[in-house]
Amino acid sequence: MSRIQIQNLTFSYDGSCDTIFENVSFQIDTDWKLGFTGRNGRGKTTFLNLLLGKYEYSGKITSPVEFGY
Image (cartoon, rainbow, N blue to C red; front, side, top):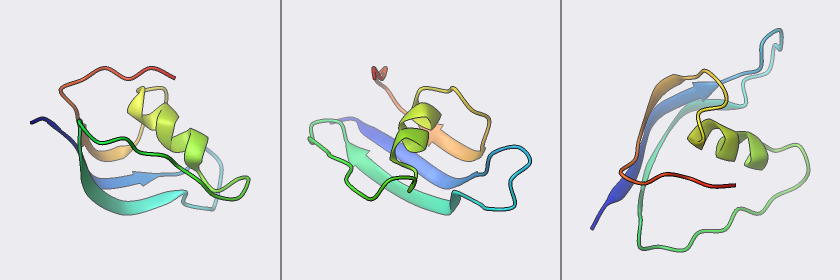
């Protein structure tokens, strides 16, 4: 069993006063199936891009698997 771990994830876009994620922590078993739902502009795509390493953030994302999107 492997886990994707998110620890104290904090992220905001450069030049923005709004924090998209602030001190978010959780873990997901890699055997799980997970879906994200929510209104437009709530951070779903941003979170996936953070997992892919497309943005700089503070905190820690640990994963034994590679992501595709």
